[in-house]
Amino acid sequence: MASISSIGSSGIQAAQLRLDASANNVANMNTPNYRRQVVQQEAAADSAGVNATVQREPQTSGVALEQEAVEQMSATYAFKANLQTIKAQDEMMGSLLDVKA
Image 1 (cartoon, helix red, strand yellow):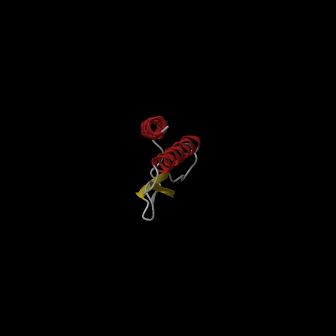
Image 2 (tube, one colour):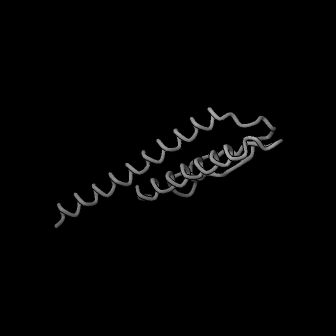
Image 3 (spheres, helix red, strand yellow):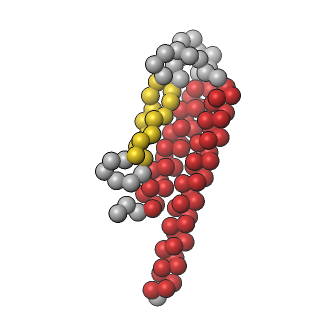
């Protein structure tokens, strides 16, 4: 069984990757023929958590600033949610140690 902290940390890494890709898209929004970066996430087959990879969109569609703002907000919420799982796991371990001690 995978630990909750490893699940949370893989989610935090995926959220950070989403923020990085979105920031890169915003920085290059005026670059001609720029293809947006998107982050694909999938469940990790060998363990719990997610695997995230950065890919380019297949065609040049340009960068919509409002879409990137929503992506950054969504990634921030995912970051906070995964941080809460790590915090909850730490609290559970503390309670367990208190009961055992």
